[in-house]
Image 1 (cartoon, rainbow, N blue to C red):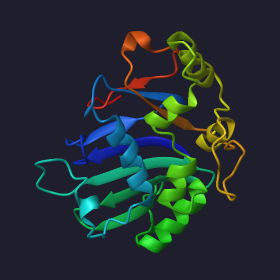
Image 2: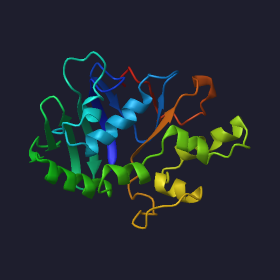
Image 3: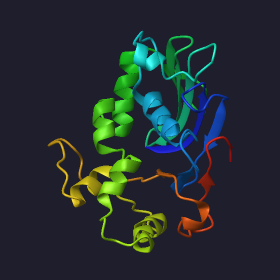
Image 4: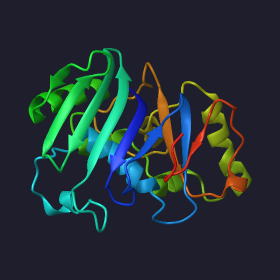
Length: 223
């Protein structure tokens, strides 16, 4: 599964319908301080994939940006071996749609059918499984990097990963660091790695040098 683009409306720190377009390979999401939208973007991707927008749960409704009149909406464009798709989740309309990007044909518009397709595309049957295997948060990444390693040395894995088209999955990173994995967790890299997203709060001067085809996206700006 390859992420191409996401449009986020009224979701946490991203309150103005920003569009983020991802480049092939490693994408670095940079924010200089808290509430810049780094974690909001990562969570928006997860909710676009797994959240049922017809829910009445207060914690999900509470993800709406402060002061917004309408609840959040997210559009996620991605590719899989089956083709290119757009997944739309609207808490405002309490609806969800999976659309074929080429023909604009609606493939599914009920939560069960969409959940089955997302599980097929991602290999993850639930949000909990996805968060446990396919995601690495900033705090967890810090735990994976040895404390005794110098700041300069800590940058090197990022530089290597940026040049390596076979970027390992988060599950493999956990395996390498000695963390336990569910018995059903896949332990091989994805056949088509696609866009990988790093969440960083380092200043620009501290970031490693990447190949020209890589880009840095800043929450609050589009490509």
